[in-house]
Length: 270
Image (tube, helix red, strand yellow):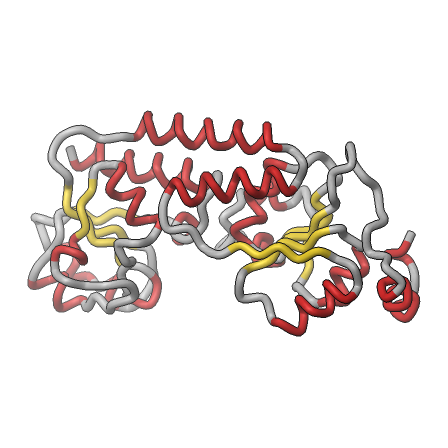
């Protein structure tokens, strides 16, 4: 197999139009994912053996949007051209920030590159799930994942007046309203503390502001000094709740876990 040949042979084979060999599953392409958010989706919409590797980020239990047991099923790469070529995939799925030189190298060697950016709404994420499932040649699996997302959202929808919440992220910043986590907050019965105060994406929320003007709920998704300050324990009108940073940035199956956690917090406030 190509993956066992020396590097020079790999390059020569690639220049000759190779890069599409390897085991095939019902003519479905083999895939390497370099994007931690697409890792989790592809793990659910590909056939066994079709997803050759995920990004190394998904192997970090502190950062991955995948459950450790799910990530353990797959090999991982650091994203280098050499590592990917050794796996000989048909398709590389990457972030929209992939280095132009890396993309050109893959494409010159006959490997298709498909990029995906972040998603700002549940609908955007569901569209991404469907696109990845089509890419994998398994649209039915994409529809099953979308159905699970929709079921979770229906089960976690809150009634009554929204509860004002501040989401305090790593580095002490807040999310913008055009972000997936903000969409999930709205769907699970919260309103945005930061938006109500004119704050935008990545604006800094200081400890002093929280103390002087506390939200109903403070969602702690970071470990900055201010976020762990003992003064926060003495704000009786404010409820503090931990929110796992792994639930902040990715869509797909992460939406299910994020919505359930937010619904649990919302129920506790009620």
